[in-house]
Image 1 (tube, one colour):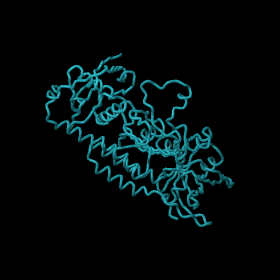
Image 2: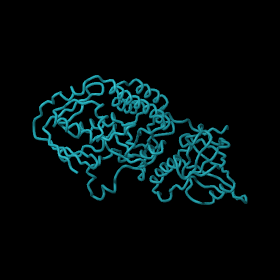
Image 3: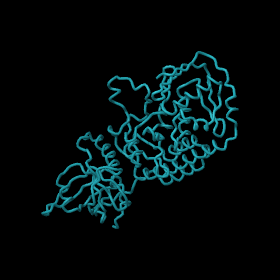
Image 4: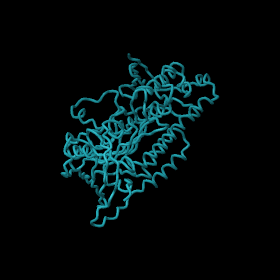
Length: 449
């Protein structure tokens, strides 16, 4: 068979471990199982290097091996003749294999044994079908290419701006890919953290929850600009803070609980990229084992690339709207805020990280916290209710980055947090580059060092 790994790609998915055969320098054969085989491209694969054993010694001496791989769904088996090229101990391929191996390790309760030391990269010289029982027909399943086409059409036809694109993407995942639990996150480049901006399928939305680059499957996917797919439950790459919960300690006062399935068996995180730069990440999970295959990974990578382009275009369009807006901002300042009634709402802002509390309830921090503090101060001091995106971009006190400020994403985040956490504060869009702050109670603003 012509060496084309695409034809046997499903055999590398670890459901049935691959076996590797090598020969020593003096002609003694050795056969052992491989913890994980990773598709690299149509002509190359990588095998996990965990121990310096006889197989490793033979590979380094003769620089060749034979891999025996079986498709768990059809029973079809293949022999792959391999030429050893190199070992990678860092970088995207290594991180992707490390994440997937952690899933296998956690599932088999052998985390210490499954520690990855390197990714051995091989060129596939030949692929042979192993004769024997006739393979079973592949069971019917989802068609990711058809789902990608429908989802891409939905995103391309969305013209409602940045926030509408987020909802359109999650709707498309649920409707066309049957993905019931998903998150969209944006990257705060300056802080090196991703923040959840939209979600589907969780009791709590988790909007505003943060993950550091390199943390868990989402952080690794964004940090290395690679997809991470795990088809078994994993503790090392989980976001359930079991240790903190078990200790009885309260969560950090400025930490939003990250949403997630307690019984997730399958996870898939892909970076959202535009122009080679990571903008955020798309994350999907399922309680079903082996829910996401190679085709799902490919389809979601393509969809995330289109979403990245669409979000970047929406942000640029919003910035153009700001530049072309003709409304006099002094007129906005003169617009009276409607009267409010009821018990005063105490709003505290901590200057160190711009964290904002409504009474004793944490709302938001960072740039979004600085924005809401500015708006509430203007409302109380000047009686303003209407504001423009442009004035936020020009305000140095907000410390927006000069490039890729993600202002639209931060306003969406703030609006959604207010909708979830407050019964008297709202932000609503009123036009091109314009929005209104609604305040339903008197305010008491307190700034803390």
